[in-house]
Length: 313
Ligand SMILES: NC(=O)c1ccc[n+]([C@@H]2O[C@H](COP(=O)([O-])OP(=O)(O)OC[C@H]3O[C@@H](n4cnc5c(N)ncnc54)[C@H](O)[C@@H]3O)[C@@H](O)[C@H]2O)c1
Image 1 (tube, protein in one colour):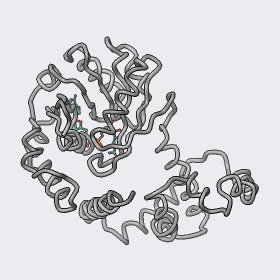
Image 2: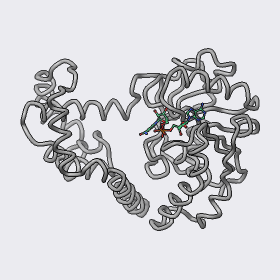
Image 3: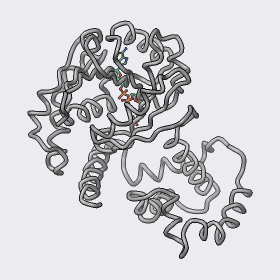
């Protein structure tokens, strides 16, 4: 448990905000949660308690779910959540006008020392934080869904973010059990979605040109590349894949990758025909009404994997 519990405000408690609330509460911090939807607020406690019970089944929380749940308070007002917060995590809908207005609202309601992280996946912080009163205390803190299971968090300062804040948030993320990745400057898609986007573009190209089925392309990742990726990234992968390490790999196979890169088309839209075919293949494997169950299966498998990784050095 932390020496001193921080006061956290969660603004927006959908898929990502609810996961964030658990991340902070299980690390011992006091969490006030505000979401604009009354319906969501009414069902939120049950949702949080079910997620905590699932974490407990996988041995991923050190305390009883009810102890962690008791640190989370659901409130009907943004001002109440934010007024005494040390740190605010904003996770409202991905709409630029809304991100701008909510940043403004938070900055007006928060104490002078608070730091605000936005979960935005698609906007640069500078596109909606520029006019905020205390913009030096705002930055992007981008999680992966669901944040209470997948630990990586991208920390992206705007040009105005106080340089002291980045190492402070990095340290805080480590303390609460997340794995921070710091970007030195803003770039569209940050790191995770740029890497994912490159792989997706190639997958769509292979699929739309008829080289393999969607299921076989998926198997290449799930039963091939992805097995290593649960433990190491692309650089360490190639460092281990040549007798003398990464420079040896670059000497042996660099030419092949350059040739492949030179054959690649410039960016193209994912073809409608290919999307329709992939949809038919995916829906034949998992009808749309089974996707919620399939997502639960994914989260169960992820929790088992995280529990396994926690036993590794
Ligand atoms: N879903 C993902 O895979 C994922 C991953 C990383 C980051 N994100 C980012 O996290 C943010 C939230 O995404 P999500 O998937 O949780 O969306 P979501 O639709 O599940 O949740 C958004 C929530 O914000 C609430 N909201 C809307 N306006 C509000 C306001 N004015 N005040 C308070 N609450 C308000 C909504 O009621 C809703 O519950 C987005 O910026 C998104 O880009 C999403």
